Image 1 (cartoon, rainbow, N blue to C red):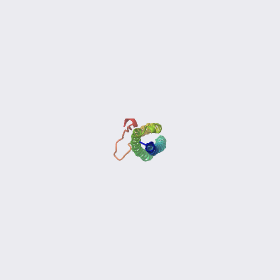
Image 2 (image 1 turned 60 degrees about the horizontal axis):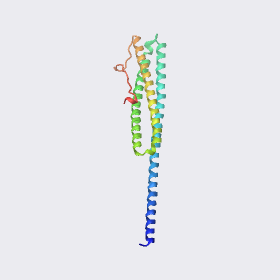
Image 3 (image 1 turned 180 degrees about the vertical axis):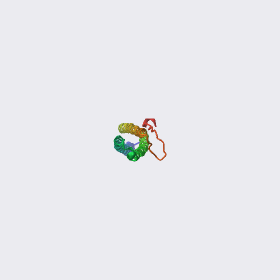
Image 4 (image 1 turned 90 degrees about the vertical axis):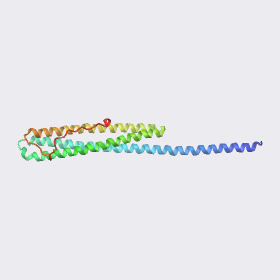
Length: 194
């Protein structure tokens, strides 16, 4: 057997192997870029939800301020209750409706955060190279969960204030008409109870 064909054949195998390695390397690089892009999307989504939670906190503060003003108005209007009763009752009804809306939004946020958590778990199975990005996303998820629980705790305070307002209305010897609806007690499940 002549050495030249053997050498040429060997070089062909080496070149073919190198080309296959280069092609595989490019494929892996593209897959890595896709994984990084998906992780960035998750982080941006979590950041958007955190902004939404902060918006809900501002809304909650507005509800608390409204309830505080209502309680102050009741204290000042004890001697002229018959005139101010309708205004106070309407404020209480509006506060209850806003609490209902906040409760629905909080439940939606809890579902979205749960979905984000499941998406992160799926990304863990896709590639070990994303561990650092996933750890950051988990930390943001925990922060969002803590903020959600803080909103819920403050919402409970608003509900207690509403109940105190309802009790004060009862102590004046009059009843607040709420369209035939009885007083409701609220219980908001925490994120970790869902």
